Image (cartoon, rainbow, N blue to C red; front, side, top):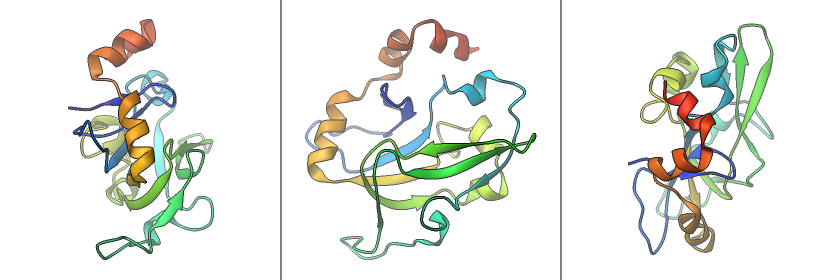
Length: 157
């Protein structure tokens, strides 16, 4: 079950622990303009944003001490379109970047065809406090569709 954070319109976790949200799986929400604008064909996905290539960071160990800490407005990747324009996808939550989906570099179509599964962008581990705050704001897909109104219904197809 996907849960949504409306403020930033990103898909977050596949499961929800009401006490503590430990991982956020970041992807594009069904109402994202990429799904609505057929002229925006994704040519490639570039993880070289901010202070380095997000694919190069490989945290290890129980505490993930060497993970890159990101803020909500930190870039996760750039969507590069066929007309050479681009859009930076933001992290949307504060936490440690555990993984980016390197499969998107080889097959950017996953972002469009399997956005709610294999097309995820990255995995973030928020701090315990932030995880609790985020969990309180998450919505089910039905709640998201209701809150997003006509825009979400338009994106359903």
